[in-house]
Length: 338
Ligand code: NAD
Ligand code: LMR
Image 1 (cartoon, rainbow, N blue to C red):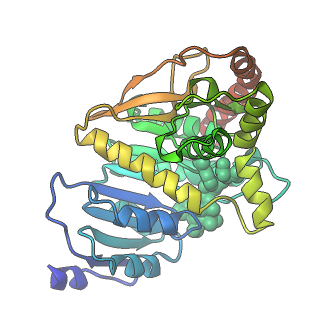
Image 2: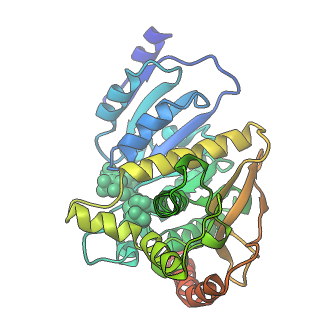
């Protein structure tokens, strides 16, 4: 096995590691694998026993990342792919494709300021996904998620491969933050906390539903307002702390790994796999919306409703709609004009 792996290595496609023999075999591709998120996410996916093949793709740097990650003594085989000419090979046979490719924010920028660069990157990567692995579950991390997911949907529609059950905007970091901040304020065990976060993934479009948080805690209205704002501004908090050196990478890699693991479990038929995600939706009048979704063998099995909202959350929901609508429309327009 090792000899055949080494024989097939080239300067731009380095294949290393051992197949696990575990079943079912699952291939995960990470596009943008050499980046700030991509590297720790590659590490975490190498640790995931549900992964049998890990394809690490980037425009530069993947042979080194793949060599490094491949030395970890878990069962999956790691292959690094570099450059456009190797993208098809990276994608072929993938069950899950995770996309953290693109530029991150610097202080003073909004996620929408990333649109001009990242929209084109996402469009070209999704064009390749439609060609090489149209049935994969796509986990979109690249910002602005509120626009990149609609771009992906339009690209897949134009290619004739769109299946709304297979496209996910990754909003798990909002949930991770809401859980952490809530546990700190409510003084409860963070491992037991659940908080749905709905809407989108930018500023006020991020709507944590602390009225539904468990375990229940008696927080004041002011505390709920502060927790909501901190969750909405969580990304900016990290961008400012990193002072020009990018945005959340480590917590995002964790969140991305949690979400990809849920996708793999769903594909493998595990029952009751529920995560929040930004998906095609009829929960509101907007065509895409983040809410709890049940993930199964075909991707999204069920988009769950919002449940009972507090008056504060109802107000937040109405306030976020115009911004989210505009971001969705911007993505759709871009996909058709460029
Ligand atoms: P980064 O600059 O450290 O890494 C991005 C990587 O993408 C680089 O390695 C780069 O070479 C690669 N890349 C660029 N063009 C590519 C292409 N055409 N094909 C493949 N790879 C390509 O950035 P980062 O900190 O890892 O952030 C990546 C993206 O994730 C940003 O858009 C950021 O805003 C977003 N993000 C999203 C969330 C979320 O919650 N969804 C959280 C954090 C960051
Ligand atoms: C985050 O929420 O951390 C990401 O969307 C990155 C950012 O720009 O804030």
